[in-house]
Length: 437
Ligand SMILES: Nc1ncnc2c1ncn2[C@@H]1O[C@H](COP(=O)(O)OP(=O)(O)OP(=O)(O)O)[C@@H](O)[C@H]1O
Image (cartoon, rainbow, N blue to C red; front, side):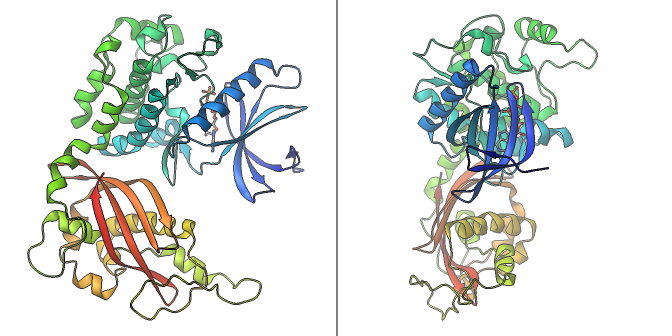
C-alpha cells in the first residue's frame, strides 16, 4: 500500500478500528516523531455536522487534560474530510478485552477507578460525557483511558441535537435517557455502572440469550425491568445497585463511585499506620512498613533491551549530572529519560507481583537488608494495577499510584516514590516513600 500523508505531516499506517462515525487509523507524526491515532470524520461532501462534532470533542478533551482521558492533539481539515489527531493508545477497547473472559471485581474496579476520576472532573466542569461504554474506554500501558467526547456537552451547551445521541447499542443508556430525557451527570453514573456489568459478566446489561436483543427490546427492558443483579460482583454489588438505580436522584455522585472503585475508604483506614518512609532494618515490621519496602524496586527488561541496543551515532554513553547513588555508578548507555523511568515502575510492579524473588533481587543490597517480609507482602497482593506514573529524571525518582487487593481489606490505593540509582547501567531502587492515595 502506498503510504498516505494527512495534512503533510501524519503518515497513515493502518486502520485500527471503526465506529459509527468513521475509521480510526494509527499514524506517524513526522514533525514530532511520535505515533498518533487519527479519526476520520465525514467526507468532502458532508463535513458539516461531523466537523462540529470533532471540534466539540477536541475542545472538551483539551479542557479536561486528565491522564485518563485520551488527549486530542489537533483537528485538521483536508479535502477528504476532518481528522481528529489523538494520543495513540497501544491497547484494546474494554469491549474487546472482555471478549476473552469477564474480569474479576478487583480488576474491573482497578480499570474503571481512573475513568470515574476523569468523569468526576468532567462533571465538576459541567461536562456530561453521554456515551460512556466499554468501546469508548481503551486499556493501554498507562491504564484505562476514556475517549470519544464527540457527543459530550457542557451543561450550558444547547447546540447538539438529539440525533447524535445514540451512536451504537443503547445498552449503556440510562433509563431516563433511553426514554427521551436529558443526559445528566447521574446518567453517566448509570452508564459507568452498565459498563461495569459488562466487564463482570462479559455481556452488556439487559442482554438476554433467550430473547430479542435488538435496540428497541433492550430500551424497553432498560425502562421497565429492575437493574441487573450480578451474582459474582462481590464487594462491587452494593455500588452497582446504587449506580444503576432507576431514579437518577438515588445514584451516587461520580466522585463517590470513584472512591468506592479505588477503595480509598480502606486506604483512609490504613493511613495512620503507614509510615512516610520505609522503616529501618530489623524488627517486626508492620504490613504497611512492608508495603513501603516493597516499593523499593527495580525494573529490568527494558534496561536489558537498552543495554543490547547499539550505541548512538558517536558511540559514547550520555553523560548525567544527577548521580544519587552512594555506590560508584558506571555511566549509563542511555541517560534515564522520563519514559525509561516510567516503564521501570510499570515493569517492576509486574515483576515483583509475578515473581517476588526476582523483584527482591532488584533492590540494592542495602535496601534488601532493610526489607524483611518483602516476599510475604507481594505474595499476598492481588491484581496490582498502576493508575498513573510520573517520573523526575533529574531527581532520579519515579512516582506511581497503584491499587491492589489484600485479603480481607478490599482494594488499597497507594502512592509510591522510588529513589533510583544506576549501577553498571542497570537501575536499582535504593529507597522509597509511600503514602495513601
Ligand atoms: N486514540 C486511540 N488509540 C488507539 N485506538 C483507538 C483510539 N481511538 C479509537 N481507537 C480504536 O478505534 C475503535 C473505534 O473507535 P471509535 O471511537 O471511532 O468508535 P467506537 O467508540 O467503537 O464506536 P462509536 O463511534 O459507534 O461509539 C476503538 O474501539 C479502538 O479500538
